[in-house]
Image (cartoon, rainbow, N blue to C red; front, side):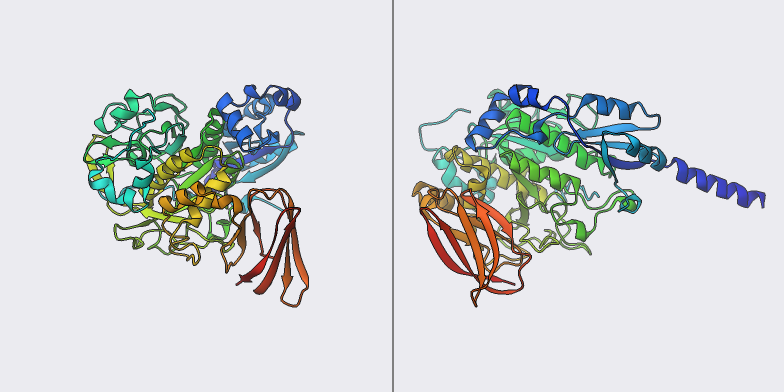
Length: 535
């Protein structure tokens, strides 16, 4: 009996004192007006210019969390604050279930959300998608000696961009990863260092400024964009500038890494970053109670996916690796690849055939995922020792694409992130017939360039994908200012109406039954009708 009692006591103690992860959301922010009146307190000049160029207003999400709220939570014995997010007006904490629940009594707390969903009332496969094997603006035409990296660039027709001097100049990419060993010393990154293209970084995991530590995965990822070894390796954006952020803790699998990623994305936003590349994906964790499910892959559940969506709303483009789970029992994309507006990148081999490991779509809510594909089999890159090697994974197809996005955006700096994303997707080889394995396919940046150079985008209307299972994107002529999109049944019954005020918009047809619909778009200067299939 004594032994049984002791066992029960220890079991109850383990439950009482076990540590849980949770997000605490606040219901207000102080001094909002002062931040609106002095935006440089929140954002750099470059970040403000990005907002102005894209007509994005500063709002509540940009205002920092009220410091006293964090201080009061910290003062509670048994609570550790792990990360914070002004976008979410939330902090990530760790403590016992009872102590965390006690925070609900604070007047400034809106809600508490446990990572273990069974504890809420009403993961990480951050397998860093690991390797499975191992400037100045020029006025003359560039012909890089790509060496073995030629195929991964020419597959996307990125050489056409490079030949026209679009190599990422004036574009800034934030790389979220596990570590950047060797970037500060090895030859493939010498060109970046000598031209001051590495602007800085931070280790959010260990809260320190040394980023050339922890792991070499980020090293390899960066090399596919910014690496440069004549005749061996040329990155897709060799003249872009980079911030290097460590958000992945290689020692464990925990939801806090999603929070650290969002915190880093907010920092990237404030610094004026244009593109975020992340070769991280989250689905399963060390504590199985924290795992995501396929149902969560809807773009609005995972903390990191919601953060990625906000990043896009700030005018950045987020490029995420789709994942390497294509051959497993859970083959679908993870978070943040499930976010609506980000570009999720799958992997193909040199012959443009999908890699068996490349995670598939659709998202749980039946949107097209992955979005695009690039070479992720035998991708040419650098390791931490400066050796040019090859490796497999969407970890590398993602940054190959991110660098191309930067080079392309350089060509059209006044275009918004929505416009750049739409042009790239329109150029892809499966654009009119996307699949769950390839998404919209492999983009052709030469075609995307032509679309813009000929100003087709200014006068061209497109609605895609068609057929669709849920979300559609609509591109309007740039002369289009404001109007409505109305959907009718083939019998003429109006079933959906939406006001639009942007040249590019995305919305859901989930409320409609499967079938054929007539759409009609009207404004003062533009009118268009057509058919779309909901399946």
